[in-house]
View 1: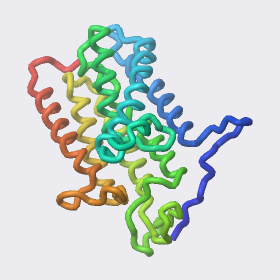
View 2: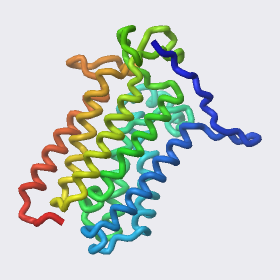
View 3: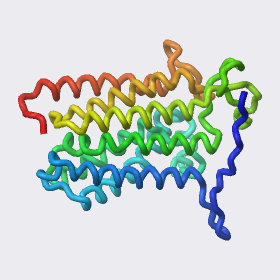
View 4: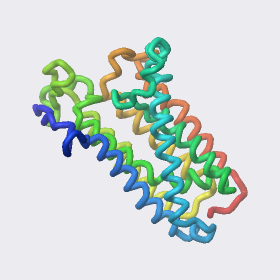
Length: 268
């Protein structure tokens, strides 16, 4: 049985300025997105449509705003609506923690819709381009969760070689390091599958649909090993909030992928 290393959340301190590991993982996530998206626009199906590195940089700017605003509002509305209704000023206190992936996804989609409208491009063309570039950022974020010793897993059998005690949980129970499970599934495995899938010409919407199904499925599985939020617990059918949010995501992905496959338009 292992014990969480208890990393110092501050990676570097320069006088009054403290640089946290979690902030660094966000920078890594954005850097990986920029690098991968530039590789994507160089692929023939996008290069011939006039996509450039400048487009990627602009998308990243909009995407960052979407992640932060959407992630925060998603946490407020999905997880603690009653609390923030009483403490509305704390909604902007992002430094206290509290971000939702599903909210961040909705925020990014809204930002990409604006980008597509202003650039005169089809929304699904934009989302197909960026979908394979997202999982590495998710992987980076899960490493940040692990460093912080947060979002730990459910109780595990003590015989499990990688079962880990998270002191931040307030107990000495062995737990699943669910952050690393999510790092592997939602980050690495999903990235490899999507990147390989998107290398071949696909009909508009196929890659976006595959992302929704892939992330939703992997997150749904990982939630069985992740400790539910203490203030919510398990909901109907013994499913967590994360799992319930994944259900419409998976259904939407299946619908989008099926619709795209049935279109007469030839793969790009």
